[in-house]
Each structure stands twice: as structure tokens, then as C-alpha cells.
Image 1 (tube, rainbow, N blue to C red):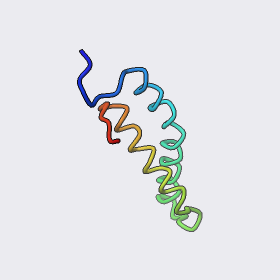
Image 2: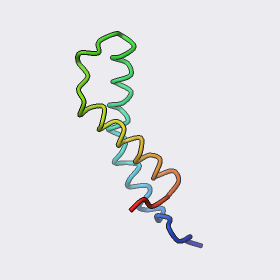
Image 3: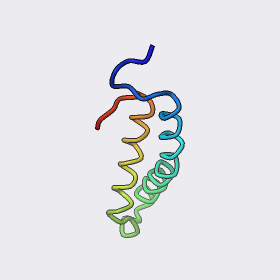
Image 4: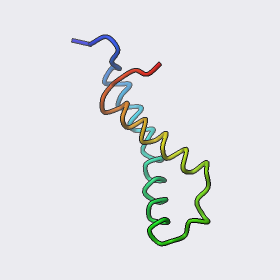
Length: 66
């Protein structure tokens, strides 16, 4: 049942749950950008948000990248 190269459901749930704060940060950054307050957005926040989207992608697909 488990395909080679796929993460188990338990690991996918944990990764998805741990990615939620970075997704909330991403939505906050989008809100700040819509309101025109770009100066309050730092590079680390953008990178952290992108990592969150990557983690959600891993959680949804179950693919192993390393």
C-alpha cells in the first residue's frame, strides 16, 4: 500500500500541522502588501512563508525530496 518515495500519513499530518504558522505569516504578508506597507516585510519573513508553502506541498502530495 505504501509507495516507494512517499511519506507516511502520520508524517504528512505532522508536517502539515507544523507548516500552519508559516502559512498564517504568508497571509499576513499578503495583507500587508495589499495595504501598501512593503517596508514592514523582511526577507526572512518571505523565506519563512515560502518554506511553509513547500511544507504544505509535501504534506499534500507525500513526496520525498531528500
